[in-house]
Image (tube, rainbow, N blue to C red; front, side, top):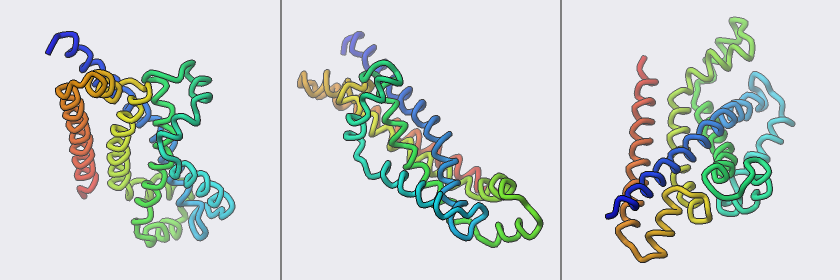
Length: 217
């Protein structure tokens, strides 16, 4: 394999990591609070607002129901307005982020569902405010579930980034299509797949480690 191809593989790997990192961080900053809101605005919860919860639920469900490839094409005007182009890694990060936000939100909501309601009731009986309950009871107790949610999200973003590469998003998906599939080079295809597998395994291992650490009493 030529040095030029090695450089292309290295660049594509870094581009994929960049897309996953940027979209993962921004999606977490929005998705985790959204997941908390979905939980605490339910009837009977500390910030019960059924109307708000209904709207948030509908928006989240709509975001989750749109296939990524359709979402990526549908928001091209928005992507172009935001980053100035509809191709490349920066452009791909926009639909990746939008797709990940509702995904994280529902996973975080699910993690909060696992918390013993008695803990919240005990905090309320001691006069804790809703903010204190969220920051000192709900989030600490759901920490392991939130790490699991982020792990699942990052693994999903790796596969989505490869899909984005097939339609001009750059990264390993673009490399595999252009230099592997289109040029009938199975070696490049195999290397691309192998790198993606290593990425997924790396994110999963890191997530499992953080979950184990968070579960230590």
